[in-house]
Length: 427
Image (tube, rainbow, N blue to C red; front, side, top):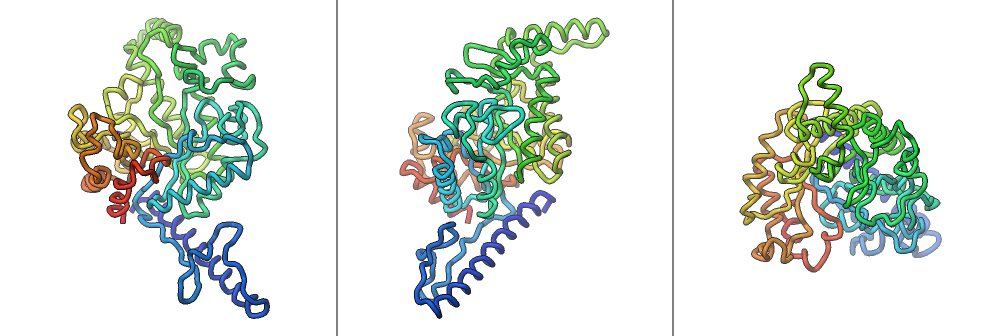
């Protein structure tokens, strides 16, 4: 068991024992008070236990065991799961408490939570405006710190919390509909020194990782999270360069080409140059995280299709070959065994072979959202144990765990049969 697994095992065991201890104290106090005051309510305001969890014989509350302390069993909690119809601290906390409860019921031991979806933040930040996800409008302070509560509540439940960050996206289509005036996109517009740092395309607005200043800004924003919150990890998703169009970073590439020729250096083709930019970003983020807290892990969840990763500048082979880029890789294996273009088992074997550095963990991203659906020509309806068999296949390849997309599909009629079989395999 390596250091990260030991840390995960310790944290889960610690919170489990803490919960047992607190419950024991609560039961003892209840018995003492009951001797003088008569019957008391077992339902607690903090949700630690309720009458439903008491045994029929002694009334002592049963403590749910968090299984698989050594195997990552995480679920992505996307921004849509956190979005508030009516902003407010109490409503948000209630929503997140339910997220924890459902995740635990389905055997999960980690939450990967969207905390920076659009160059904004679900926490007070020196770098990014408040997210509209929690306040309704970007840049508006919701009056509380959602991330602080989410980390605390997740840890109290004995689970890990990984902060999910989209590194380059500022706006996608018309979401969010309003970019606040303190958004870097607006702040940098009039600064000649920062010209080109953001790019507006037909699909949205993005940070341009060609510039060292942009890479540093993103990395410092990640360091801020690790410095201010007791997160267990930080994860980038699969969004890097949003297009292969050369116009996206034409000026920056031309400047690089001219400088390289002047210095007598080899000029990288555009695709390789873009990969070098992303590699520099990933390496810098890793360094910043470790400088703040060496125990916090950094992971990336790229697309399962390696060809697509290459096209968007995600040089996964380099990341997996040496220390200094990441601690885990989690390809989004959102296909089933019947997929001709990307067969699940052989594709996962390819990913396994990419890992040349022993300290890097391989997790498998699984498509809970496809289970029981008509997607992929209806092949997900051919069986109700596809996800369960994928877990078994991952274990046969000695993968370190599994992440499910997404929380919204853990407990639905569509996915019920599949998730029941997954829980049997998870044990």
